[in-house]
Amino acid sequence: MTSEKSKGMTLLLSKPRGFCAGVERAIESVEKALELWGPPIYVKHEIVHNKHVVERLRSMGAIFIEDIDDVPIGARLIYSAHGVSPEVRKHAQKRQLFEIDATCGLVTRVHSAVKRYAEQGYQIILIGHRNHVEIIGTAGEAPEVTTIVDSVKDVEALSFPIETKLFYITQTTLSLDDVKEITDALIAKYPHIVTLPSSSICYATTNRQMALREITDQTDIVLVVGDRTSSNSNRLREVAARRGVKSFLINDETEILPEWLEGVSTIGLTAGASTPESIVQGCIQRLQELGVNRVEDVVYTQEDVVFQLPKPLFNASFATK
Image: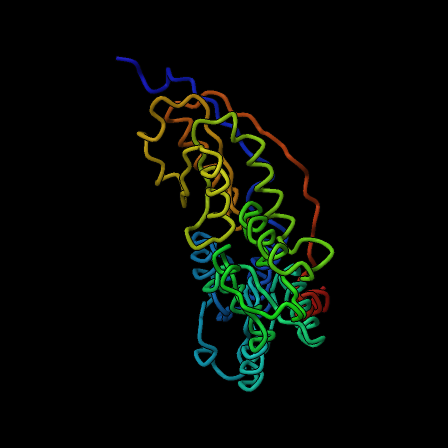
């Protein structure tokens, strides 16, 4: 009987993968707050969409909440990387909470643009998943003039008069493929519509999708290591599936099924922007146990982006030195 190890499978590791600068900043914000002030530290929503990260921080004393009323008056509250609406901030201020804003800077850029164009009299078309926490927060900047679309069908249903001033912008973690289809439909329907000079899809989302595209034509199967609640991880799996490659989203190595690898010679592996590298390494080890005997890095680009900690944490850290 032929052993699994005789398959001699190759594993192509897509780079960049895993943590981006915004995720690193958000996680470090919770860690630093716990270090400076001790538990409990309250966090609005999961700091990033990854159960391994959330469980580790919870074990250190972080308390993740959805309702601001669950935070004791005067306590410290961190906003997650996904951002929050102005209404959430007002509510927190009424409860005299000590606010620490770990919103990714690229999400903040989108919030600012929505607010600015709404003040200039534009109707805002926000491309994204309407139930995603980032979209909820962004739409909250100008709810009375914001319309959310997440498909070409949604665009076809729009009924703005042709003279309406329109501005569109996207969720930062969307698929490049999907956004192109939707924006093409928007521009065809409303040729005068405007947007920002550069894409609002974040650099990390773009880089991880482009890096995965580089290897899909060489692979029989793609594994994306990431949480099922992670938008950018789901989009990565879709990038491979759209190109006809069998693909699976896995939380960690325990979810890899040996039968997926039957008849496979080359595996592609990437990870969402909120996935720790330690989890990726566990998946690599498991794949080696299942027959991978060659591992290659495929580098699309190098990332050197760094975001400074939120001011309250930066200032407090500086004061303790």
